[in-house]
Every structure is written in structure tokens, then in C-alpha cells.
Picture 1 (cartoon, rainbow, N blue to C red):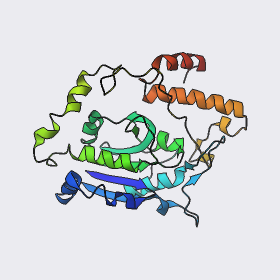
Picture 2: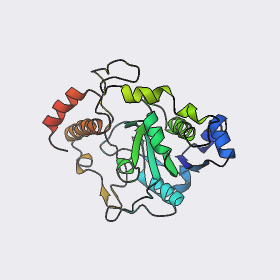
Picture 3: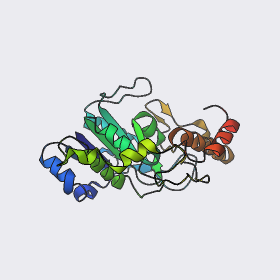
Picture 4: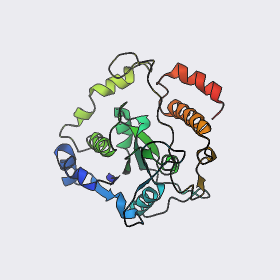
Amino acid sequence: MRFDLITIFPEFFAGPLEHGIVRKAREAGLIQIHVQDLREFTKDRHRSVDDRPFGGGEGMVLKPEPLFEAVEFLLGESIGDAAAKRALEPKTAIVLMSAAGKRFTQDTARRYAQLDRMLFICGRYEGVDERVAEHLATEEVSIGDFVLSGGELPAALMVDAVTRLLPGALGNEASSQNESFRVLERAEPPSVSATGKPLSADRGLLDYPHYTRPADFRGWQVPEVLIGGNHAEVAKWRREQALRKTRRNRPDLNFAIIAVCLRRAGPA
């Protein structure tokens, strides 16, 4: 298994991945870990990887160009563009770490352990240009209902969770086959959280999609509403997109309210 970690803070991983099961797995040749500095794929003297969001709003958004180019460099081939997108190798995953992603669970870790290669995109700032989530990443994943300052910690967590499931990584293979989450995930009703308590009815929506410059990237256009300058329409669009993203990635969050709002918003 090979893990590629794309980040603006490559030195972050010098500690977390040099201990315990992960270190032993590396030394045994079970896994390879490559940390890629995203700023190596910038074009300006400031090595900028972010820009202001279309439609206004707080914070900065990670640009699509350096992320696409970093992934293509690591894979050794082009992802393509809106006219012709290339398919990935079947046992390769590109995972965008995002608070607005699907929840990472032990089942997710077991599925990832069947792969040959994983590339992690560690987000920062306000978010990542939505074209990365839609056209580059194969999955958008969150480790829980909270917000961190970046995707590095979640990526390190997932590398650890997946590595320990690989054959030979643990001294006793039964250790990974008889764990609590294996039982909980099978027995847990959809309406109950991992703590055994009913899911709260007042959970918030996931974040809306973010876009930054360029407006046209490989044929993928920024939605016209974000460029038009009508703030009321921008706010309405963001609300509708947040509802749809929540329905798609986390249907357990505020499901009844989401269903009503989606009926009002119209078809996706």
C-alpha cells in the first residue's frame, strides 16, 4: 500500500507517522508513505495556493490548479478535463479531507485496506475549490462533526486506521477482527449515533461548495450565480447547495428539515 499526503505543511508528518504500527509497517515494507509539498506546484513568486472566493465571503479557498497538478505528478498521468476525463486505476483512491465529507468509519478503513494506493488532499483555509471535490477526488471524507484547521491530522489518523488492517501489520491478526466498531457498525440503527444516543434533530447543514479563480478551469465553469454580483441570489444558491450536499453526504443530519427544504428548492 502506498500513501501520498498532499499538504502545505510537509513537516507536519515528521512526527505522527514515525511511531508505532505505522513505523513498523514502513520498516517491514508493507506500506510506503510520500509527503508532497503542494507549494511546489505554484507559479508565482509568493508560492500562492489560495485565492478569494467567488461570490464573496470570509476566508480564502485553495485553488484547483496546484492540487490537480500535484495529483497528476504523483500519478504520472493527466486527470484530463471537462471534455475528456481519464479514469483512475481501480485500486487507487484520491481522498479529499473535508468537514463536509462523508463520515470516516471502521467500515471505510476496511474498504481502503483493499486498495493499492491512496492519495490524501489535506485542505486548509475556508475550503477547497469545489471542482477538486467533484472532478479530482474520488471521495470527500470527514472524521467527525467538528472543524479542524487543516486536513493533516485527519489524514494521519486515516493512514494509521488503514495500516493496522493490512495483513502482517499487527502481531495478532485477530486484533483487527474483533474490535468494538465492527459490532457497533453492524448493530447500530441508522437513527442512532456511535455513542448509542439518538441523533440530534438540530444538527447544522454541511458547508456549501466553494469556488475561486480561474472561472474556467479545464472546461469546468464556476456557477454563473457566483459571478453575477446578486448577493441575494448567491445566498439562495449557497443554501440550496448546502442542503443538497448534506442530503448526499450526511442524510442523518436534520433529515426531516432537509427533505422539506429540498422540496422547496426543486430537483438537483
